[in-house]
Image (tube, rainbow, N blue to C red; front, top):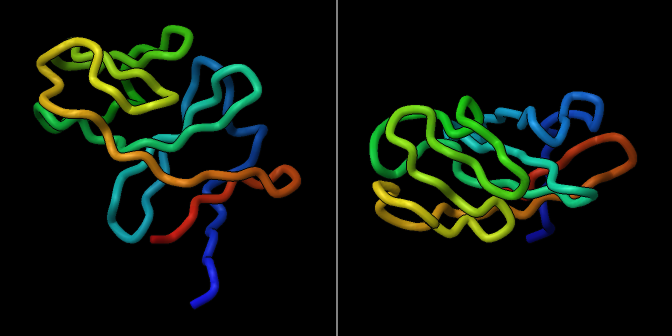
Length: 104
């Protein structure tokens, strides 16, 4: 089966402190820009339902808007509880100005 990539937005939709929300077949994904790199993580905090893209981005971390759990954007690692676990990562790439997420 060939790899499938879907458009999740465009580079103009994204900045270092304003991540992009995307829904892939019902799964909430957050897309972050850290420096020149793009990262795609599950967007719902594992502790309690909150969209991390509505949280606080500080460099390469994002803080949950509800309970202050902190996650490392490049790895998805939970750095501060009550996150409960690390976040799932998704393959993301840039095709020209288009941000694409790999369908798994």
